[in-house]
Length: 250
Ligand code: AMP
Image (cartoon, rainbow, N blue to C red):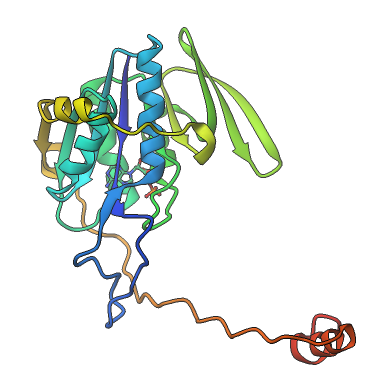
């Protein structure tokens, strides 16, 4: 079977986010961009399934600017086989991403789509769920373990109360949680090999998808700075402060 892994290019998780002075968005000029960390986990899982003989091909899709091809290349260096870049210059909301992915699924015919559980830029956590809904496929979100057995897949999900184990019939949409695996580092020979792998370029128009935004961002602001703490000298002083300053003991 084929596995499709959608990956998003986002601001690197180590970067301290700065809001633009006019509050219209976050500063992207000269900011390091990388693959969304949960998507790296999704690619690792897809490559492991291929190495275990459950998959024949791993295809990476990224919807974004031309630089997203670098993101695809890093996935190809981890062991994916080829990529599809859908070029878009403005940010694309999860519903439009899911609609484009649905068309690619129809063309490529994968049995498994593994996405990240969320993109760390907008924290939407919507695309996988919307894609499964549009396709009418089963979905297993927040996966921490995936076992493929014939035409079934057993997925352990991280839920609030602990772990939930689901058995689903393929085709399935899975979204990867943090503890699913530890992604590998690409070796130098694999980085070189990835340069020769094919990345097909498409546009949203090729799929007949309107990517114009449906949401209007009214403003973005920095979180309020935390007040400095104070040292208390005794328990009675602490209790007094709690009583008068926080209202917690009233
Ligand atoms: P979100 O719903 O935006 O939090 O994203 C969840 C997952 O959907 C991400 O981890 C990616 O796997 C996928 N995804 C979201 N946006 C894109 C995009 N522009 N291109 C490719 N995959 C995406």
